[in-house]
Every structure is written in structure tokens, then in C-alpha cells.
Length: 506
Image 1 (cartoon, rainbow, N blue to C red):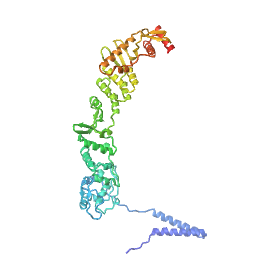
Image 2 (cartoon, one colour; image 1 turned 135 degrees about the vertical axis):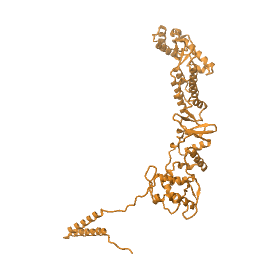
Image 3 (cartoon, rainbow, N blue to C red; image 1 turned 90 degrees about the horizontal axis):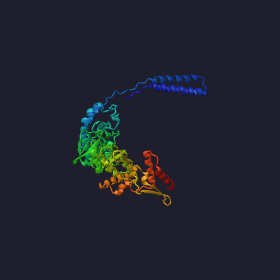
Image 4 (cartoon, rainbow, N blue to C red; image 1 turned 30 degrees about the vertical axis):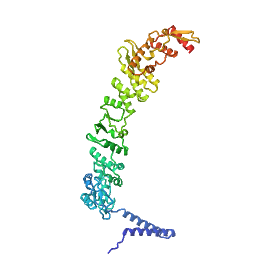
């Protein structure tokens, strides 16, 4: 039988309110006791509020907290747990899928397995909150989901993000797009090479629907302790999996090396750079011969091309930056590579060579001379190639004298005429009195030597040495001024006459 009990506070609240209301009515009607009624009601109300300020509430006893160590022990047993949430509601015998292994387990087996693992922590963690830490999330299990099914115990463990405490679990939701066979292969590959366990593919849709979002692991933190062998198919599958998640930095941490029929994968050293094995043979040969410790050639698989950043023209430009011009073999090798490259890339090699001196007597520097001549001839803009070649080449004709191509006078006429009827003339020997006219013979001898070595045809070589056409009056005028400035001498009578005649009639 229920007993009725008077609520004292309610009596005070309501009684004071009645007194105040009567006082307001008295005030409106101007009763004699209006001030007493209002004052009394407000005083009672103030007393009630003062007493009600002191209030005691019931507090639940401190709950036991499941530590990470405890949860890790639970996680170790998840291999025997099942991952379904939809079966057994109506008492059926639906089969559930184990998240780690994919093994089917009936309702009764599931309940028993859950009882063995989850029940062992029920005393301390059934209603616990995960201790706050960077690796856990606070969740009230009792309020997470109804527990009218044994499968819900597993669901609650997953709600607590226990699976993320398994250090080897590697969860990539986008890999759900892989075919089942491909996913099974990539799972085995990750376990063997990186010691990372992937959830079973059938569990991915279930994991994606977690109320608590599972953390996506950082691909850059993948590591291996030693080298492993992979097949071509495994490398292609690995590339496909990385492409799905738009991860292109894998080869910044590892290198792939072709070893016979297999492919070796190992950690990348600090100084190593992976280059694509599908480059031209000349580029690969250059890398092997001169940079074997720095550039690691990948297998020639098309799937790797997008993952390798240093390739094509960028790789050739790096070769040009790193070249030692004093190494004749390296210089020749790179020059041969550059023959098919754009003019801007070829310019960079010429800029590396400040001056090239060829000795007519000893033939020293001839290898560099013919290599640069070939390179200059390969320019699409022939004028650019000629100018670069002219600015670099020096020819040592004897122990005391060195000339450049600007010192060569390519004029076969002995006399230069001016005037409407050629009534004025200047003899060429009187203009160049320091043996400059002999320089042409030196250049012709070099051209003949290059022709004999099959570097190019004579017409092409005359072009690159700027000897294709005879010097015009303007060319002779410019070269005369060049020689006067070079020797720091004043013009003679014949030279002065030529200058005046050129300005008068040109």
C-alpha cells in the first residue's frame, strides 16, 4: 500500500505564491493590508529559495575503467570472434563472418565464443568507458545498442574500437573496390612483407558502418626489416592498390630491383633515388656506369611509371647538373643522350663547358671537340648551336698563339672593291697583317679531320664552324675592328681607307 506524504517545499512555494497574488489584488484594489500581504509573500518566497539552494544528489560509485592493456588482451582473442550483427534476432541459426579470418560461425557457437572472451571482462568493463587516451574513444556501451542478441556483445567491442588496438591491423576502406581474389592476394602480401593484417573483405562494408570511425593508417609508416622477393604480378597488384587510394610516394621509402625473374623490395637508403626501368637504353647505361650507387633502376613495368617521379627529361637534366666535365667518358655518354633532347636541355651542357681548347699539334681536346660539334649540329635552331659552339672553341696553333673562330677570315678574294664602278679597292693582305688570313687553313684542317672520322658531312661541319659562306664586306669590317681591339693598335693607312670606304658605300 502506498502512503501519501506532504511535500513541504511545494507547500511553501505554492503558499507564498498565493500570498503574493492576493497582495497584488490588494494593491490593485487599494486594500489597507496590501503592503503587508506583498511583503509577507515575498519574504516566504525568499526563504523557500534559500532553503532549496542546499540540495543533495545521488552520485554513482566510480566505475571500473577498461585500460588499454585490458582491451589489448581482448583484441588478441578477436581471431575467435565473429563479426556479424544482423543474425540470431529471432533465435535462428544464421552464420556470422569472422572479421579476421572470414570463418563462418553459427549463433550458438558465436554466443559461446563471445561468452568466453567478452564475458571474462564483463565484470570490469560491461558498462565501462574506455580510459581517455590518444588511442581510445569514450563510449557508454550500455547506451550504444540494445543487447538482446549475443552478437551485440561483439558489436559493442567493435564500438569501443578494440580492433584498432590490434597493432598489425591495416584498414583501407577504398580497397573494397578490389576483386575478392585480388584482395585476398594483397592481404597475404601485406602480411608477408609488411607484417600488417588486413580485415577480411566481407567485413569491410561492416567496418565502414561503424558509428565510431576507424582510423585510416598512414601509408608512409609502412616499414620492412629486410629485403623480400615479389613476383611481377604482386608488384602490379601492389601498384593497383596504391592507385586506388591515390598513394604515389611508395618509392620514396622503398626501392624495387629486378633480380632475374623476381623483384626485390627493400628500404631505400638516404642517397638512393628510384628511376624507371623503361627509360632509353642510353639513359639506363649512363646511370649504371656513372651513378650506380645513387640511381636504382626499377623493373620495366608500366604500372611503376606513375609512381616514379624522376624520369624522362627531368632525369636527363639531373645528369647534366651532376656531370663532371673532366670525365671524358661521362661527357661523351651524356652528349649522346642529349642528341634527342630539346635545345634548352642541350644548352645546359654547353653552359657547363666554359672553354674548350684544341691543340693542333698534339690533338689534345679532340674528343671534346668532335662531341660538341655533334651536339651543336643536333640543335633544331641551327643558329643557336653555331653560336654556342663558337663561344666555347679555342684552337691552339702553336706554343704561343691561340685563336677563336672570330679570328678566322673566310674571304677568298684577294681584293675588295668599292664604288659604283668598283673604282676603289683595298688589298686583303694590307688589312690583316698579323697572319690572320692563315687561320682559315687551321679550321679547314680540323673540318677535314672530323669528316674523316664520320662526325658529319663537310657541308654540315662548315655550317657549324660558320664557314658555310664567304665573309661579306660587313663581316670583314667587323673582323677588322675585332682585331684592332684585340691587338689594341691604331688602323694603318689601308685599314683606315677600308673603314672609310665601307662607311661611304655600304
